[in-house]
Amino acid sequence: MSRRPQLLRLAVPATAVAAYPLWPDGGIAEALWFALVGVGCAAVMVLATRRREAPIRAAWRWFAAGVALNSLGTPVALLVSPDSYPSAGDPLYLSLYPALGIGLAALIRARSDRVDWPALIDTTTISTGLGLLTWVFVIRPLAADAELGVLGRTVSIAYPVGDIVLLSMLVRLLIGADRRNGALRAVGAGLGALLAGDATWAVFNEIGWEPTALVNQLLTMVFLGAYVLLAAAATHESVRELAEPRGRRGPGVTPVMLTLLTLASLIAPAILALEVWRGEVVDGIAIAVGSSALFVLVITRMAQLLRHVEAQARKLADLATVDELTGLPNRRGWNAALASAIDGARRDGRPLSVALLDLDHFKAFNDEYGHQAGDRLLRGAAAAWRSALRGVDAIARYGGEEFIVLLPDAHGDGAAAPVERLRTVTPAGQTFSAGIATWDGAEPSDELVARADRALYAAKQAGRDRTVLDAAPAAA
Ligand code: GH3
Ligand code: MG
Ligand code: MG
Image (cartoon, rainbow, N blue to C red; front, side, top):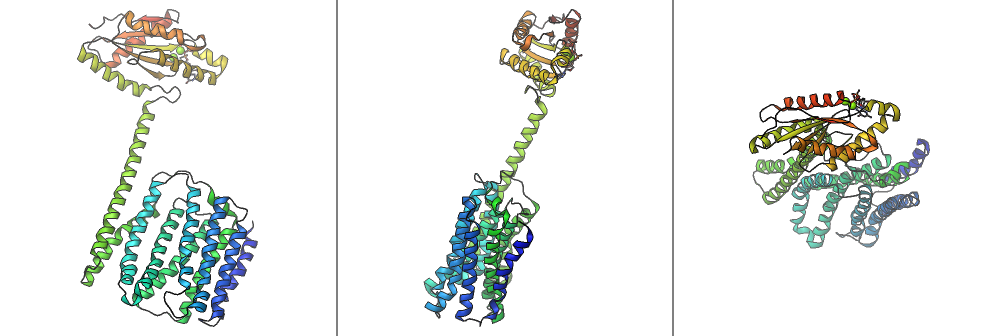
């Protein structure tokens, strides 16, 4: 879709929103205009997504229901109970929260195939900080307002609670999201506008300011703008991508998220400092509960990151000691095994032999059948040899088409026998030459391997396809 029809389509609702202040302030005509825009946006949401994937359809039907009901709040309040609080409009206003919440849940579910714990913990951390802020500045003062009555207080508190839940879900939706997606940006901006509008009301209440007619109208237009943005998201081409699973992110933290988490974590001490400065700590318990929750969340997140880093370190260590082609240990891995085998042989006074194997005329094999076939043969030989050896014997790829075998408790013919067994399982009739050396009870490991190498050379010299034992005296 090109940009022009998208902009043209936005012109109609934008004009409708801009025309809002033309109606007499506080009258039924203004309220009906508000409802008309709301129901119109809801209709657009349903129509624009009717052929979309099921989660998109479901999400925007819930958004549409919430927006339509919310927009009917003012005319219903004016017609049914103009002077009471709570009014008949409040259930309609409030229905926006569960409806948007269910819609957001449908999107979040569609986008993640299983629970994304790091995202959930980040979301919870941010909502805990903001929840504490809302508790201290909005909810507790409302709960203490004796003028309101129980119903009035309950209804008043339901708004900030709904805001916090919506904000959490919005954060969760946006974590790891593609910021270039137009529909997602519109949803974020729409919900952001709603929440900012509510927050502005809350601030006016906190400072005890009665907004002027103009400010009232501007704020109401913010809500209309939010409706339009949710409708615009529904009509945007990129809405389709919102139901696509996001795949799994690592538990890493982006700089933006780190900033948000830091700010959220600092809310508790900031409120405490403010109350101390004002001369009386009135929210001690709430601050204690909030900061404890934040500590636990931050530590859980740290533990996740630590586990992730440890797992990566283990993976790297494995990669450094395992040969990629055959899956056998590489020379580095084998050297560690040899060192500990020599230690064991010295301690127990038992023999230990090392066999070096080198495929015969392997260059010719490659030349004739190709390098890929050569690789397959190396893999096949490695697997066959590994399963033909005892569990205590270690085999490694020493380099190229050379392999090395560690034979504990074996010397002389006892070491040659398992090597001869390997000949019978080598695939494709391939032959190899082998040199065996037995540890003399004192020599360093590289000397032991050098003797095996000399024996291997002797085997090649003697015509290949054979095993040569180095003549050094075996240990007791
Ligand atoms: P010799 O009997 O004297 O050992 O003859 P050779 O051809 O096996 O010995 P040489 O050392 O001259 O050549 C070794 C060849 O092994 C060279 C290379 O083509 C092949 N080779 C080494 N590593 C690999 C590998 O990872 N994959 C494949 N396909 N071939 C390899
Ligand atoms: Mg070689
Ligand atoms: Mg060779």
